[in-house]
Length: 278
Image 1 (tube, rainbow, N blue to C red):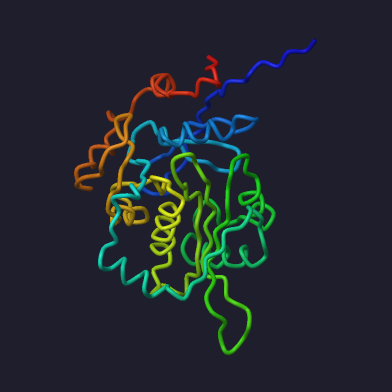
Image 2: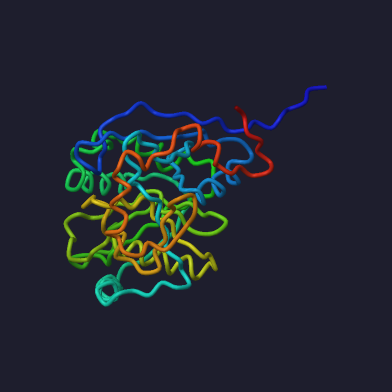
């Protein structure tokens, strides 16, 4: 008789490469594979500890000289939009939301390419082709949705225009916005902000307490906008806590703020059904 033993996740570290958020820094990631029957359980558990999903991998920044990347989430029950965000909601009230299974389309890829070429032409995804894009959307071992936002037809046409897209994971305690992109030519709509606001509404409708936004990086212009949302928490010192004054987190840029890799792995809490391997 063959017995199958439960496989515990093993953790690895990537080679250093230039940081996309802070000039002159090098980034390094701690990661593990996300696979098997317990993938959702592992994704839920590690998301609560600052990890993010990319296809079938869970990762968390583990840089040698910096700990600036702080996982951020919104407490849905306490969130209140600012006046600016209320105006953003009104500007986009004609958008229609549709949540579908994680399936890539040509319209999505065309929008994705326009977004990258305008906003992230020198980023790590700049050379992504349609097959790699499809893998990003479709290769998910957990419960995921593609949330599309479309605008009314233009010039009397019948077809609505795809305006924004978000790949979203459904966790046991919230929605995790894995990756979003939108029409870069509609800057006045503040579409990035709108997609986050709508995910707060989605989570509230579903009775989920959090919306996970990815990483907030003090000192980074690209990631600083996340601090504009009320009821924001960050994962710092091994626990979730209110962000408070964003300026108070500048010490995370210091090399002495980084724990050794072995200590980081030892502190990771795994689900009871997933024993740790050395």
